[in-house]
Length: 387
Image (cartoon, rainbow, N blue to C red; front, side, top):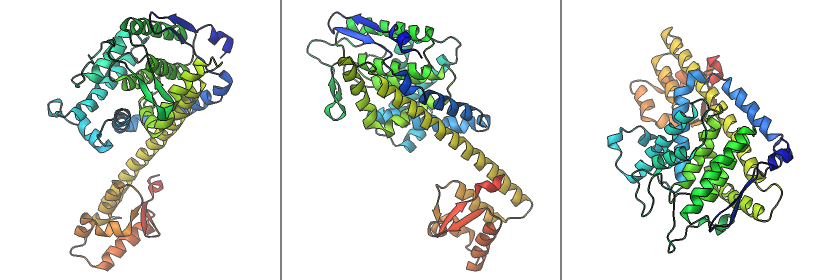
């Protein structure tokens, strides 16, 4: 990562009306030198985990969480649970606009994943238009046309951002400037690929400069996050690229503010204006990959625990009531209070014909077998007994 080599990749574009626009890596190699291998190390540990055993469940969870994240950033109103339920609907059952926003994002994800799976995939204008069309199809907007770049009439001015997050920014308004910049945008990215700039650097830069051009009337944030994810997915990063949307939602103020911070640093001609956003992205990838790794481990633990308690039931080392308690606890977020357990209708139904001594004995035996812990009136499964 020679900064002198990186500077040769700068591209200054003279537009007709917007003025000069410069694409640059603008990242201090020394400031990201430690972050890059930390992300890669986390990724190597993650892909070495038993992904094949949990791939279907993990993918469903990541997609629902990511769609919820990117949709909520842009004002979507569905909860994460409602988002997951919408994604499970048959196409003909999707009626509401909020539901349409969700299934559109999923369609864009599918398009991106398919493209990234093709060897030699390259970012181009057709792909960007295709992603935008998928995201905004059948959504009402007075000017937006899926896949068509913006060309503002003189009476309509597009602004991006707000004063809370570093101020408002006026992106290019004239369609000719937008087409010109988007063409240079994809060509510049090709230069970065040819120069072997790491995808972990390229992806956030694609996101940043795409948002600065802001080429469409609607859906730019969602498109930008998909483009970033596709660049990473194409070089072998799995799950984490799309899961970054949730990280951005969780750190929304910093996410929005950094776009303006980098733009202002570039306006002041600081040497490495884009370092803050790239560093933020790298930390996000590290956090997200580690979360996914933890989630894989937990899912595997649960599967093994389910298998073990089934065997214990089959050989009559636990009874049906005890098995039901364990199976139900697996579905509940820990910890579960004893009071909540006792008040649960399913739990009460187990003991309609049984006395309190039976209830106490069942729990005591589960504790003695090491299958549960009870501390401070909280019940926790001991998933370690799965091994």
